[in-house]
Image (cartoon, rainbow, N blue to C red; front, side, top):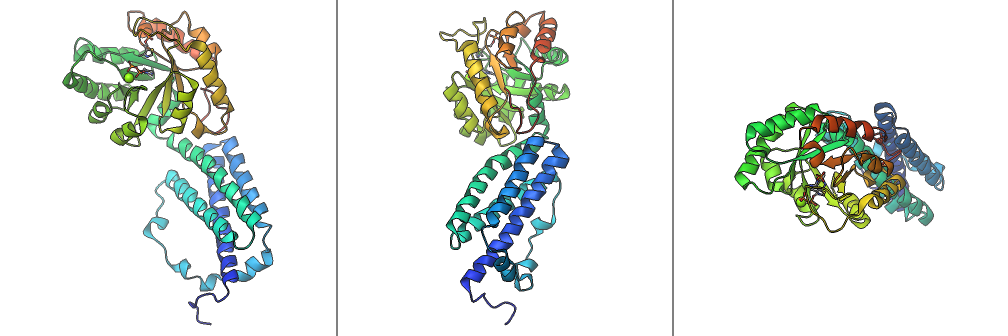
Length: 377
Ligand SMILES: Cc1ncc(COP(=O)(O)OP(=O)(O)O)c(N)n1
Ligand SMILES: Cc1ncsc1CCOP(=O)(O)O
Ligand SMILES: [Mg+2]
């Protein structure tokens, strides 16, 4: 037979496809498992990937190994000589991981589709594996993305301060430096009283100063100004543009925060591309007036929701907000929250002392490691 004639027997061709894709999926899973095990040292992700690989082996055991091996014919495979330039270049581990996740998903889909012609139960079990892979792969890629400076900083953040545009640029710069030095991780420019031009100028200067001082710089409400000023991100509420539209403006690498006031909004936020959530208002404060306070009860609900989540991809860092200061931060911590956002407590002359008390108290709550395991808000 000429090496490139089509395979005459369709069921043999199917077995050939199944054999090739079983190998491809197993190799992909092993590649990912090694990254979780040796690069991230993440126990839960390593265990998830190992169990997926074993379950694939079990699913494959429904098919005849003899028939699969007989159908294998690498010498006649026209695909072995066609490579794309992309296949030969992997610039870093993230690109290895994303290539392996894509290849594994494709291989699983082929196993499922062609498997349907041989054994429906086999196809159904591959489908289950494919669905589980979506979650585990998302977790793995997110953990690798957390290697990106912004996301790593966000995931370690505990203390978030909202500041206004100040009397003048110099005053704002000094404020940023003082708060960064006092241990604040994230700063948000929130000022509804200045015009757009001033807000843009302060946001631009703030971006540079915040970066020099290793704090994240977020602009409140305005995706356009966040993008134009090269801020690290933008924070929006339930009344502003939806997260998907905000994301189109600021891009994939920017941080997008979303305010939530009840558990349904939290679930929606976790299903969106928001990178973190604000939860509150918890207590009455001087900065903004509210009629309704979801309070600590809401924080407890969020803590329960996130601790029940199986995958890192399903939860985001959550910051309690509203009237929080040194006198009541213990009540927040008691709900399981280890992150807060504040205005009043860090706006006056006691900012440095207050930041120290807040941080010390918040640090009594463990933050999740960057893996699928042990997720807390
Ligand atoms: C971290 C953080 N959480 C919540 C808010 C409140 O946002 P929003 O509900 O849109 O209210 P305004 O701040 O726009 O008045 C926030 N700004 N930051
Ligand atoms: C903007 C905002 N959204 C909910 S509470 C709040 C104000 C936070 O400031 P403070 O810490 O002074 O209550
Ligand atoms: Mg808002």
